[in-house]
Length: 147
Image (cartoon, rainbow, N blue to C red; front, side):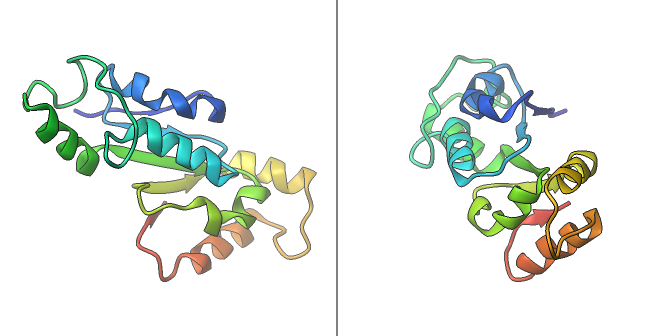
């Protein structure tokens, strides 16, 4: 069974490949607010030609089933799960810049988003539900799962 790990902090997005080399199926990056973090996660998550993940050993999820390096990297690039968490008003407002088609899905952290709304008031987005509606509207025409 595959495991998706929520890494401890956004600043560790560059270590996604290291975590995945332990046998994980996926990574979830918390508190994403900027597209640079998404790009950093993509580079560390995907093998070339999509990303820059290094081989990292023989323990990775599915490696025991696919021996050829190129075949495995293609399989991984289609199978691995890369997700982000939207947990601040800044992230909600930057959502169109943050989302990338290489992400498998995104979800939100209601408690952290509520903290953000309480400390960073916004004229139109006053509640968690307002933020969800804003994100849903922004992605009505985009092929990404919003949980």
